[in-house]
Image (cartoon, rainbow, N blue to C red; front, side, top):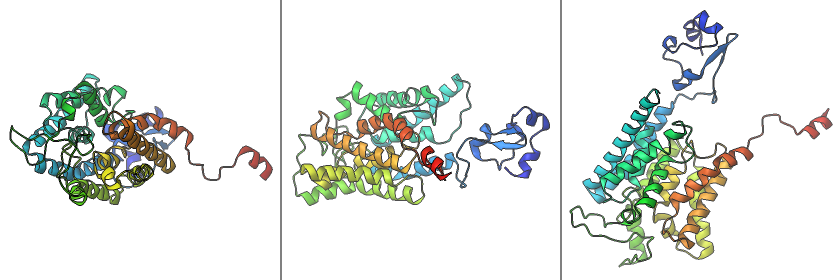
Length: 354
């Protein structure tokens, strides 16, 4: 903190190690000012201690902006019904978070996290799912997968994926009803998703790859267009919002497993929610490891579980549950994968050095 901020702190607060929020200038770093204390004229705050000019809220809104790509594709391929699903999910997520914050007597801050949770959940749902189910899923994501653990930064599992898993378990029939793109009316044509056992494509492999790349296939409303998901991922990596290691290693693991078992590589990569999960879900700051090596281990685990579920499991898709399983291992990975402090020496070597 600079000298200007020091002058805003009264002597009484300095003696009691308390920072008066109302007397802190706007140059104080975002939410970190709530955690700053004063001890013997030294300013102490929680890590990270290096601020590079971008707050958590800005990161959230940049991430939210990247979701415009699959959201636009959802409306283009599945019509206004997809828009209402997205609207219901995001509105419910924000409203439930507001209610819970008020009930807990906590300050509600529109930082974009609830919007992201609601929109991510919506983009993983079938286009014709009943709106009341969307509301239940979004409420579960916020109330029981996020706020019950203490809110943003404390949740163990990805809230959007937890909500989707909850809906898949409670309403399996509705969560597996897929429709062909371009059928906007009430008599929309149902179709199997590419990963379903009864999926039949009338055409060449190249035509199938083209449809999956652009998004002209049945599936969840935001997961069908590989092109737009890749574009959004490139932008997020370029802005350093997500770490490239997780999506790259995640997809590469599925590619390697496909080679070993003789599966169609392009099909395995572009079908289902692999790319969507690798870019938007597995990279979640809170539920993924903090170290580079830890993120690689995390991504490898996601890729292995995803492929094993697809190949040997009863479900055609394994992205959702693979990421949730690895979310549970994240604390263990962080515990044992730690970077060595600068200048650290093992006790035995330190004695020998003396």
